[in-house]
Image (cartoon, rainbow, N blue to C red; front, side, top):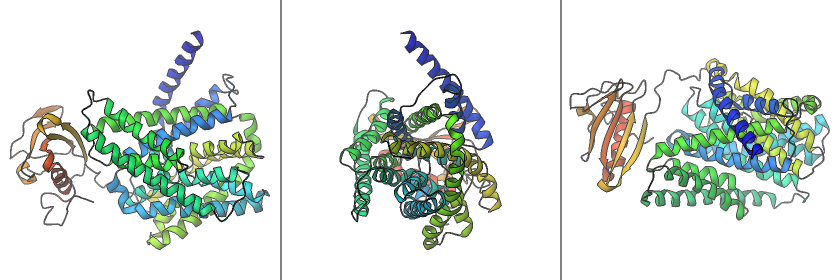
Length: 493
């Protein structure tokens, strides 16, 4: 019991410190992973003396945390934001990964003298961008939808092919012509599993009359975790299945969606904190000095050669402007995922795996400081900053089962064209009505002559039959104003 008490106390203290560290990371524009890694190192052998060197356990816990991070990423990714970047995002997460692995493998073979298999293994580990790092940085930047969508899709999807490549290269089995078929099967079936379970989860949750609101978020996350387990069980990509299932669930009309997203975000933060602290605990500062040179060489190869070349070859066919290509090349943030992937060969006893883990640790710290700290400046230098543009309107849904109706909670952001619109001009479909407006901390029942303002929270009651048309109309007016239909704005994109 005393050991349990101490463990719970240390865990609670670490989480509280990590939560407070989020505010610091947001202010300086860096992923909070650096602070979490620092906490882990401080607790480890060089600090408080906690020794932890179990590579297999670190890999298992890291993979479990990655599942929760991808679940949160899928649930919080807006389809209308990533849809314009769907094919570029898929190209970055598949074709660009293959190019990056090949280019990095050749360069590291020639520069550091690795044998071909080990050089390609380094390339596969370093090809993955980190979903947690990308989401935490990009969602605090103001860049175009296509850039955000491309990078979010890439970071959510490219873990799967990189994981498969690392597992195959770690194995002693010979690489044959069957490799492309294996990759195609695992990725294709993984995507199908995610789509299928996501679709089933949506329909089940819509029809389930659960006795407590808090059960809906639990069930939603469980569907995503089940997608991972199912994919892995049939030798497909469980990571891809997880992200796709979350994407389907997060963009469907789920009851209590806001509660579900908040719960998933909390789990995602907990997974990030636990993962990065664990990796910091595993790291040995005494070994990192020997890994600085190979880590910096590998980082330079990936950042200045492999990544830009892979972006150039995959984005040029989509006619992506050179400014956006430069930003995409620099925004391939590395985080915990490469370290977790490096644990796979270490747990299998591959020669040179210790150096790989240490080098990746060094590389992640350096690249996070250099890339994460300069993305905002780069977006402004390339004239890609859109901070003056209006943010997408936030519409949440709660089910009113007994009334066969739904309640929409609309938050009007700064820059919205809803500002100044009279309720009579909103022209919601029959069966929908604005029941309450909350403004400056006070609520009131609006009338036809009530004018909406930025910062208002508007409650709209609508029958289920016209719920979709109601939200579509609200989004159209948000983007184009009271004359949305005349301007051709349908509110769907």
